[in-house]
Length: 326
Ligand SMILES: [Fe+2]
Image 1 (cartoon, rainbow, N blue to C red):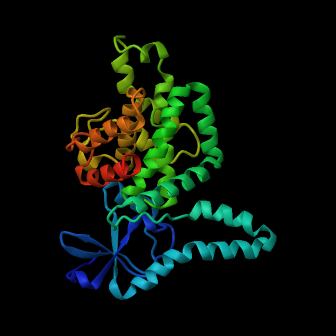
Image 2: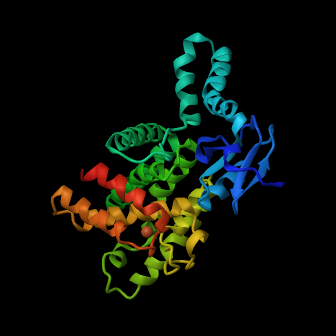
Image 3: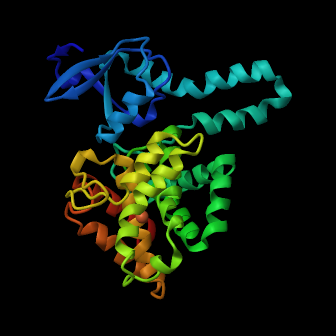
């Protein structure tokens, strides 16, 4: 990587999660570190999924493109869908067009998440529509539908909670700038499986906080869940990390590994927010809808860096308020 001293006018910002990490880049790509633009990839390189995920996990949301190349770059992002689709249609014939279009859309979709814009009711409504669209699609996926059926057969209250957490995680994820199908799928699966380890705990232990096994079992469930899922084919490692870290806290007082700050995976922090939020709704289930949402939002609003990275909270709280209160 070479360091340069361009000024800000020489570069345009692009949201990282709008990029397919496995496609060859149409222009050079820079990152912004310590007030310097540093060349990260050259035209023709790929970002690569490992690096891509690492950046997202560190809260890095943007990359930079030389200002004169920005139109080339943006049309490359939009071409992603069109090129792949026409290729498929050519091979498949016109009569199969819809079928393949649906299949490809599901794999390649990049949602507009308005991360650079100030939130308002209309944007939040669009994000909610995007969440509904994403969830509709992912439920058609064989692995997801099997996972949901399995959770339901084991414990319907864990299953209900897990579905709520998965859906809410997608909304919060979009609010925090994640628009790429690849990231959202991992986030959804992480939400769905976050309490998988609890299915292995004897319900008698789980229902009684006085039981001497209770706190041990609860402390163990993130690791138990991740270890069980590790043996299942096709579960991405990002999903395992979410399951393992969903009770870690930003201040380092969480479990099982007392990770702190940026050591915690970004997507695990999102599932953690959704988990706490849904638990408050469950605890207050007898309250009127608006009241219980108000209570849940307050907990996020006044967290003050205890559970979650404070740099995200204003936007998340504003989005939840626009979605459920205003
Ligand atoms: Fe949990």
